[in-house]
Length: 172
Picture 1 (cartoon, rainbow, N blue to C red):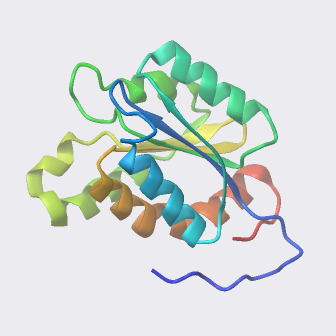
Picture 2 (cartoon, rainbow, N blue to C red):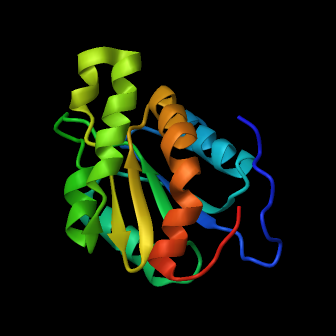
């Protein structure tokens, strides 16, 4: 993946907060969170924060609302908790916050995943939506899924999505 050329140095850069949702990950074992940050930075985005949270829906909602309520990030990208296991509760935590849901994001991710994992791709509940004029994206926690989603979906749409949701011109 190559770094896209800067389009207009006068436009502000896109700021992204990342979250890893896991009951077991630590800073030392958060491979997915590390990869997500590297991919976003390599694509020219500013990763302004990263946090590992337990999959407790009320805490996840509070954190997302806090980030979206401040002017510190234009988007939030979450990894983990999008499957169907009993502790996978990311979707239940964040979708009630969505003012708008981007159904196409999950559909596109599952379509791309099909080529890698076949029918197991339908077990993913990856999604995206708008919270307080901020784009919030929920990805699976596996590094392979993070790489696929970030390179094929997040990076190509992030600048335009932020422009649309925020009403301002941005660059990456």
